[in-house]
Image (cartoon, rainbow, N blue to C red; front, side, top):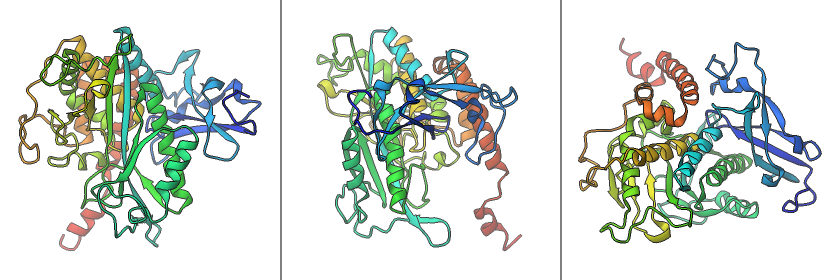
Length: 432
């Protein structure tokens, strides 16, 4: 038993993110855990509805072989289940890292930055709505009549869900920075502490699982879906990042610059804007996501950047020194945090590699008008077109991973396009 773990652990919950960001995995008894395990690689052919498609790399038509699921026992953490540790595993096939694994895509992005002499640091802000049973087999908004933005306590959390979430997260080493209610009800912002990129995203991945499972135990549904309600705002997944040099200095800052930003930071901003449309497919990977990405929604619609401007996709918060960072506000709450963070890091890196220069910062409100006409595509299908057309960005993420992702998402879009919705029936059926 590793020294950092409780002596009474009886099993390890081995988890890894699939292409949707879902937490796949197994329970392993402690005596078997050091050897890792195997899972069928063809889970990467699964859609949300459990149908399978012959996505590249998923080997649906090649016998559905196993992939290796491995981890170091020193990475096992105390879990939130009784006598259970938890760990985020790596995936490999035929002795090589699995190219379509989201965690591997992120590790590639980190390695690319390290090759330039920089260590990416990341902090992620999650937004989520909480729902309760509607008595008809579905879900409705959680009844929090006293809720308001930046609220705390029973008025916004009558079941003590957030109290339990903070207590348990702290006890197992998932570092929370803050939790509060959001502008819309019953929505919450859940912010995790800043740390190295892979650790940060692993923390986010585990935290998302923990939060949903605690809600389930209280008979509630915590959802990261980008736009579950048509009459209020959506939920995002904001990626804050900075870069450290080998001496540990934050190279985003330049005290001699009027804005306190280095040339490197400005190139990163330019890269994020250069690949704005292509990034949307990764950052907004569902049909629903594009109902959140609209003008005036504080959601990263425009290809713009600004100084502490929440209507911009790339916001530069006002803090400087060690806290100098860029915040990317496009990602949808349901986005895969590994792929999304990789997309942000790679687009920023391409800005540096190609020495791009950003346009002037946004000075308009970006609600009714913005200084650019460029914005995210109108739907997932068009976003996938933009992704495939952006060759440098595809090569940076990894062509195998992108080919797999696009295949899965094209299939998802085709199902939506063929579906007859309740809106269509209600709108047309009485008259036509």
